[in-house]
Amino acid sequence: VRLVQTGAEVKKPGASVKVSCKASGYTFSAYAIQWVRQAPGQRLEWMGWINAGNGNTKYSQKFQDRVTFTRDTSTFTAFMELSSLRSEDTAVYYCARARMDVWGQGTTVTVSS
Amino acid sequence: DIQMTQSPSTLSASVGDRVTITCRASQSINSWLAWYQQKPGKAPKLLIYKASNLESGVPSRFRGSESETEFTLTISSLQPDDFATYYCQQFNDYPYTFGQGTKLDIK
Image (cartoon, rainbow over all chains, first blue to last red; front, side, top):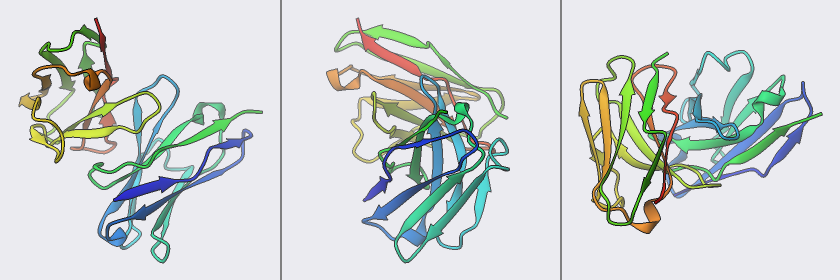
């Protein structure tokens, strides 16, 4: 069972970033995918989840206006897109399976002009 | 939001020691608490779910317990691989929130 994420991204303020999370070794549509981020030296921060089966989503209110979760069941991949990036969004972004028993390796997103 | 407060923030211990990390929730979370271990540059690893259930493959020296809004992670006999940062997380209410972490280092 694995979750493999895209590589590091560098973005300018105001841009968007889209991180992918490809699942293998289990029935993708049977589990939600959660998204968590960790800014340098900070605690983990939950962003929300997507039901990989029906596409339903739940977003943390903090990110509600800027984040979109999607999934592609044909490629067993979940996506997290964060828009209007600012320096404070510099962090490692993780995907994790439903009860957070399996995690991706993390994607470093750096926002810098 | 439910606030999760861990103590201590840092803990120095030796191999073979018994250590305890505490996580206090700002309100009832009905046992919906998980503990994770994180090493530098790595993703968190689930250790304990639903406050006291040991995740499959996790050594039995890790134990979770609860008393109302106070949750405890105990490592009965520290091994070299256990030096890491530990986080608690509540799943009772949105947004799910994490504690600030406890860094366990070698004395």
